[in-house]
Length: 300
Image (cartoon, rainbow, N blue to C red; front, side):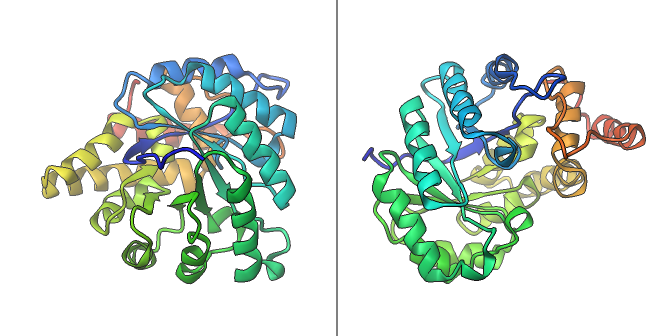
């Protein structure tokens, strides 16, 4: 197993690009990575929730891992989403991601059989994956999509494995995040899962964030962290407040279709989501573009 990696910084969770027939369009993902790499980002997450992981076949997932690693600079970390509904699938994807050159895997908990996802089952699942995975594992708590909000006790029990190095939490419960950081083993790293609570997460000890907003406002996300680290708290608070409406628009309010639309408007490739998710209605698109303009998010 590799040494623990430093997760400090901002990671965009890259959307997966599709062509007009909904086939993979990996060259466009590569172009997006090359454009975003001019910013001082810590790295990239491939195939997270914004990457429509659940909409891809296993073969497609492997192709995305491989294509993205080819263009992610060597000094940038590649995180790969590998969470499946079974332990066997998750291990296969984690091995594929490692073979493609990922630096760590991000594993969403299985969620279809919610009643069966006891602490015992979750610990067994994550530890089995961590045992087999040759690169570090990061826990992914995403109750908005999975319908399961893992407790602090569950996350801490899962983290009790030498190859599990951190947590991406998208639930936004700052009290819980603080509890996890306070009780976790030395070196356990927590990442905010949304820019909506990025500054709040830093204030309780998070080391960075994997945030959708970083695809369209990377410098602003980086600035929030740097302002916090430099103890420029009023400026950090103002920038955080300014970014919240945009972040909400491309996450909880309108989701992946809005993020892709915003990317298209800024000179990146967003394209269409894969059905059954639909693109934005024209009226919503107009609202989104006006919001971006109001917040001075006009180019990348």
